[in-house]
Each structure stands twice: as structure tokens, then as C-alpha cells.
Image (cartoon, rainbow, N blue to C red; front, side, top):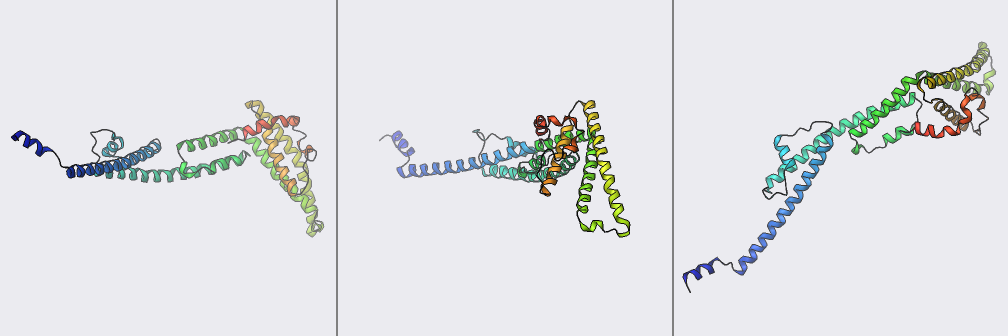
Length: 291
């Protein structure tokens, strides 16, 4: 056997050495795959959170954080070390903490906007169903888009109220007087009403008569305000008023266990000349009262 042959034989691994090497390679592959799986998870979560909050606020990230956020894990030049794993895990947790803080601020702002939305909707006699659609949103899914959508709804209703405030004020006054009239009518049905203590009966009758005179006058003023609004802005508001009145009267009739029909409150809307088109206005009302 020549010296060259001896040197070649020394370079070959034995069967046991090959098996040990195979086991070691398999173990290293397992470690690499586990690290890569965690790294991709941390980086993916970090990027997702960053994309959510960086539009609304400035995430506090160092240059090193930015580097780890954008590092190419597919590159063969990237060393998949425990240090890299720790850095990306820390970055992910850092962004999660910032996201939680940001989400608290968004939720607080959203609650404030909901209060504004509720107030302006009440002033405009708008459907409460719209508020429910905003209240039922998942808090964890709040974002700037939802805030903007709610702000736009508030702005639209504030503009409507600013334009139609005379109409809404008269409508509210009519409703308040109508409630007083209902209460007066209920008192008339009680035996105690006719006990003339210190002349109180005359005062009650006088108040009842004033309400009977005031309600038709307010209805005329309300109708005139609707006409003026529609003439100036070329937008229909009369059917919103009719809808509010019918809803209120319907609730009252249900409370009093009275069957609601058109003729019961026909006289209340005699001055609303467009009443005959009430059915045709249903689509308009549904669209107008949507959130």
C-alpha cells in the first residue's frame, strides 16, 4: 500500500462517525426550522402591528428596531442566531405594548365621538338604530377608519341640524306641548281633577284650553318652517318630521292600548299637504335615517 493510499483511507469517516454526523445535521435542521418559524411569526406580527399604528401615530422605534423589522430572513447571509430571535421577540412585544396604548386612546376617542353622535342624533330626531351599529363594533378592531367614519356621520348631522334648526326646535316644542296635553287629558279622567282646591280647577281648565289653542298654531309654524327649508335648500325634510310625529303617536297609542290607524291622527297632519304621498316617501326615510 502506497503512502498516498494510506492518507486517503484516513480521510474516510467510519460508519459510526457518519451516523453521528447525520444525527447532528438532523438536529441542526430542526433547530433552524424552529428558529425560523418563530422569527417569521415575530416579524409578521411586528409588521402587522406597525402597519396598524404608524398611520395614526409614530411608533417609537430605534434604527436597530427598523433593521430587525425589515431583515430578510430568507437570505443565506442572515445568521439565524438566538440573538436575532431575542431581538425580534423583544421588538414584537415592544410594538404590542405601543399598540395596546394606542388602542386605549382610540377607544377613548371613539367613546367621546359616540356621545357627540348620540347628542346630535337626538337633536335631529334621527334613528337610534344608527347608534347601535357604531356601539356594537368590536373594540379590538377599532382603527382610524372607524373613527373617521363616525366623525363623518357626526359632521353630516351637525350640518343638517345647523340648516334645519328652526324646524327641529319647532318640532321639539310641539312634542313637549303634546306631552303636556296628554298628561292634562289623563288628569281629566281622574276624579281628583274636579276637586276645586283654592281655585285650581279653573287654572287646570285654562291650561288645557291654552294647549288646545297652541298645538294647531305650532303645527302651522312647523309646516311653514319645513316649506321654507325645502325651498331654500332644495332638500326634503317634511317626511322626517312626519315620521317622528307618527312614531311618537304610535308609541303613545300602544301605551294607551289604542288601535293605531290613519284616521286617529289625521287631524294632526291636516296642514301637512304632502301626506297623501306618505307611502312613496318610505324609501326616502329609510335612506335618510341610515347610519
